[in-house]
Image (cartoon, rainbow, N blue to C red):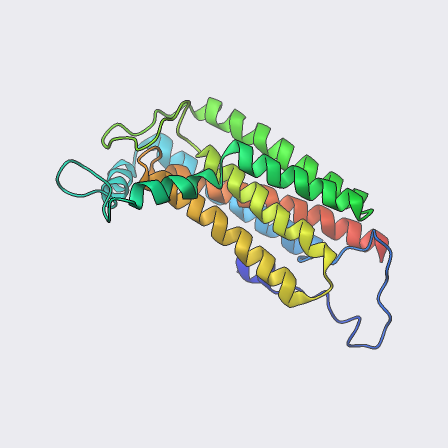
Length: 245
């Protein structure tokens, strides 16, 4: 239901009614109403809390191990598929790496400032930077060791739950889609941006399990929490949209 809300905006009736659209750079075309964004964000964090509780109880340990082995061959625990599959998966995971995601975020903030959209630039900057800190604190708080029953197909450090790549990919790519969507009054453009952001963040999350550096519950919890944090940016944008109407 929440994804349906994200991909279907009720904001485009102004032109159909014959009203002349505002040209002020501060004008926001918010994807969600304030109420819908807050409800969806709350649901995401409730699901995260449930997943965290299950992880701490150890009740889904067997499912986690099964999920890791799903992508491995029976002999030698190598990644299933052709020889280039591991390289492709490492390329997917780099989409959620620190360098690329911060470069994209910085470029988007600069572009918004260039367009005179200072509020949107501030929302994007605060959402992504605070999200990075929240994700780091969560990992330190839960301190779950990384998987040991399969080989890691790339070097990693730190704890496992929640997945930092999954959390930050959801925060960055969904927030980018939501905020950049304010540049277009067209609903189909905003829907396409959000769908792309969701798809990229899911691919990043999946790659972490395929590489054996995270349990499935790590990436699921990370993505859900990251999406919830990005939805707070949508709520903030709805407030800005109301104020600029």
